[in-house]
Structures are given as C-alpha cells and as structure tokens.
Image (tube, rainbow, N blue to C red):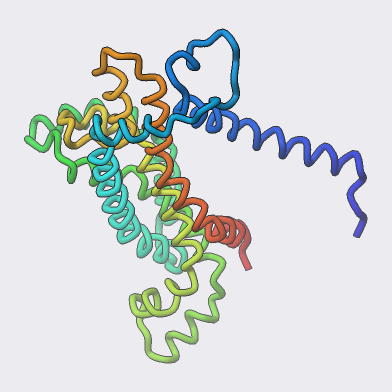
Length: 278
C-alpha cells in the first residue's frame, strides 16, 4: 500500500484544522463573552479572553432567569420524543430490512421524502390544527410532533444498520424456535446497540436544538425549552444582557456537548457499520 505524499498529508491536516477552527472559534468567542464585564464587551480594544473572568455572570443567570426550567423542559421533551421515536422506528426498520412485500420500494421512497421534509413547512398548519382541537401549548403535543418528524430519519438510519446483520442469524433464530419479535428483542437489538445509541444521540441533538416548532406551538414561558428560552431572555430584558445571553447559551449547549462527547464512539461505529453491508 502506497503511503500518502507529504503534500497531500499536509493538505489533509490543514483542511481538518480549518474545519475544527470553523466550529470551535464561535464557541470559544461565546465563552469569552460570557465571562466579560460590560466595559470589556464594548471596548475598542479586542481581547480574546477577559483579564478577570466573571463567573458571577453564570450565577446571575441561574438566579434571575428561568434557565433551569428551560433545561428541565428540554430534557423532558428530548427524552420523551427520542424514546417514542425509537419504539416506533426500531420495529419498522427491522421489518423493512428483513421482510419482502409488495410496494416496499415505494414505501422506502415515501420515508425518504418525509425525511427531507422540513418541520417549518408544516408548523403553521399544525398550529391551526392544534388550536382547533384544543391541544395547543401542551408539552405532550410537541413531543408527538417531534416523534413524527424524526421517525423517518430514524427508520432510514436503522434500516441500513439492520441490513449489515448477517441473514444467518435469522436462520439460527428460526431453528431455535424464535419468532420475528423475539429475534428482534433478544438477538438483533443487542447486536445493533451501537446503531441504536448513535441514532439516539443524533435525535437528542435534533430535539434539543429545535427552535421553530416550540416557538410556534408553545405560548407559556414555563414550558419553553432552551432555544426559545434564550430568545425570551434577550427580548424581555431592558438591560445590556449580551454577556448574560452568552452565559445562558453556554449553559444551554453544555448538556448536549457532554452527552455527545461521552457517546461519540457509538456514533462513529454506528455510522461506519451502517455505511457498509456484509
């Protein structure tokens, strides 16, 4: 096997560094702003890091805002939506992977179409529909919308993962007398744990960062998740709150960053396994 040329290797590393900087610089700048005083924020002299970090900014966010309520709402919405999505998607993906039936390709095409459908397209009709049946401004109704929105992606992703499981395992399960459901629960799901965890993490990121759906479908400040809570923090204060808003943003993304870092190995293995078929 030929070794990569030094120029190509250097170009590869430069591209990687550029991509890393593209994502890390805004995060670092937000963190820096969250620790500055008001004079430092509006100083004509650019500083990458405050002389004396103001960790009291974070204390004021916890004391004077509803950030903890927003985090609780985001946690409830995200966990509930992800669990419902997985309960619906795992059997569907397994059936599409293992079953042969008339119209399967058309059904897969419909799933792909719905996967590409943005929630923004349907949020206004949903708003009118929810008001008409009196389920507007309810967390559980928003959770159902999340589950319906992200299920096509989860089905498509998990179907590709189940396709990588050898068919010989199904034959062995049938010889042992296991039906389809038992084989799914006790054989295929343990094998597919990396894929299930990886799709769950991707769903968590999607649910946690959703803004348009909760912004339209919720009206009670006590029900706002993190993204809408941050907008509400900015729009309801008369004081200069740029540093407080930056601090709240860091608090808001910290749980999802920790979750992503802990389970990143499952995401990598799930993507790698789902991309190949044995």
